[in-house]
Image (cartoon, rainbow, N blue to C red; front, top):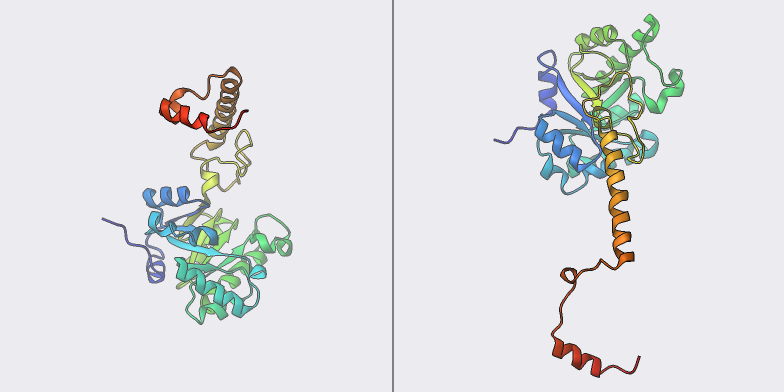
Length: 274
């Protein structure tokens, strides 16, 4: 029996009931694996969500997609783009912009997901790529931003690298806003990791050894070593092909298309002298 995809209403109903699982995915293989593994929520690039095969391999994944509000253009351009993505198969839209932008989308019933704590596109405003909310003032600022997102109509917010105790206190005070934790503890509504980190997968398959994994992540498989092994196998296969060509052992007759001897004789008779 096919698993039912979560809805926006389900997210609110599941607050405090159970933690959801969430992955950042990049490929159809990731999507198919997440579907078969029973993952609840994924974040995926727009080009993946727009792929006609995406919903065939991932029918039950509640899917977030988005791009920076700086890339999205004006509020109306962002709204049109969000509509296109929802029509393509997304379930909700990421927005790292202002509360005005969140509200502009939400009032047209676009399910919007905000971002608090360490927000990469705003890292310069919070002191760089570091934890946020380690002082009372900073923690209260994160809380107030979550309240503002909820009031603006957002359905959820990624809460990234905030002390677990702070995130937990904020989460229980949100009536509807679902908090998706990336390095912010188990007191939120979902646990969110990047697929490539779980797989120990380097951003560049040519790299050897496991790439740097964030402290908040956990490596479940070592794909980096497997990539390195496959690269050596690739080199070996290419080298064997080159050697076969140089020795004249490739191609063999089984790799070639035959021609009847009489046809070949007639063909040669019709050719000019070489």
